[in-house]
Length: 277
Image (cartoon, rainbow, N blue to C red; front, side, top):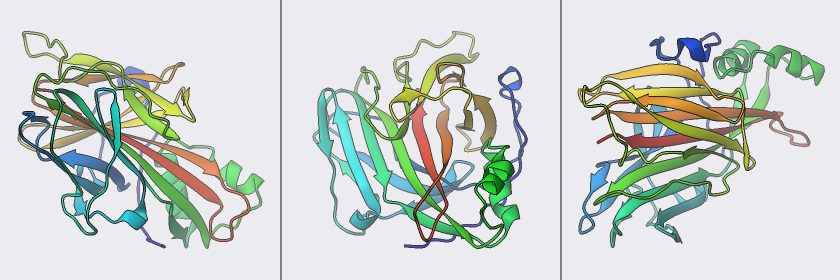
């Protein structure tokens, strides 16, 4: 199960008052579901790939049941487990569509990374907003090298079918984003300026306050900007959006792990992908 990833990252804390100033790319490794089309007709199909990479660009991964803890699609009030053939690419192909907001959820099984130096882990943790990581690590009496971290991905995709009407909601993932407005039915300013969508970040079913959120904004020409935002006291962050843009949100929980031989930390990654018509 080990899948060593190199995480060389930087970034300092970024407050909400300065949100939207583009910042230099970090070398974290996001995981998300990306569709071929964000708006489809009900007599068409939704095709979406699992992707792992950075700056909203990455390799498309095949469907492997052994690496999936949960994979579901939601149309209206119907929530359906999704299965495919081993090795299928794209990993999600859905037909028999219902008009409205289609939601796809994907949760991975745990995977392991081992840090051979303190610097790599410290850089990663600080880049994700955990600036007290050195004190937390030392307080537990942990070694500076040769320790492991398990990571689990919790992803969500929003796609419009026909009119795209509907609402996102929480689905019980240990950490997840919930869009408080539907991006496909949002009223946009006539002058082309940005509108806002509220998104709430949850952890174990409760709002996660003062948490760092990465926002990746892809323009129609496929250029990507990355920004750091922060949730408020009730776990909500306002996402500025423009017509024709695609968005990836990412947030990480970093928590201690006890009683495991291979890992002493665990990260839970949440992502959300949608587009603005």
